[in-house]
Length: 185
Image 1 (cartoon, rainbow, N blue to C red):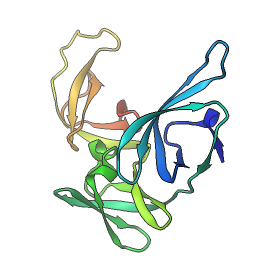
Image 2 (cartoon, one colour; image 1 turned 90 degrees about the vertical axis):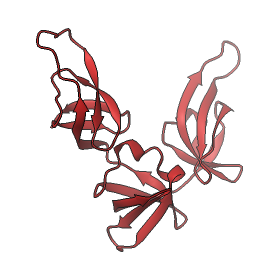
Image 3 (cartoon, rainbow, N blue to C red; image 1 turned 180 degrees about the vertical axis):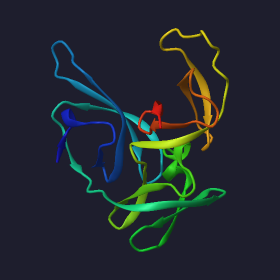
């Protein structure tokens, strides 16, 4: 069991027979009443997102999620195909199940397949990935105000902000949780 006070982004739990994951959570302390927890939740089975308020101290059943190493192979329209590294079984997943990972998913890349009760419910990317900068503007010499960034398109098609010294063709390290630049690789 998990209390609502322990809710964190990414926590998976069961409520009213639905398997839910927390997308965003806010703890709001009210003056006289107890705390209220507002959470943005995603139904893992159908992909729908909704907001829900909880009272402090409510308890819910934690879902036991298992994971295994896999490799992303290819996509054909709406299906994304992965190969389990242990069984070599190919697992097709629809777009809604992999939507959070899409910006940083590249062919041949490693992921973890997340399973609940013997059915695959989604994928999880490594925390950091090394990706190639496919296209970015050239930095202007002397334009060195700290914290200045420019947009860069990565080999996966994702666009993120990078420092001025990063050029097209550079290999950079990206934090997949926040989708931000970390450093040059």
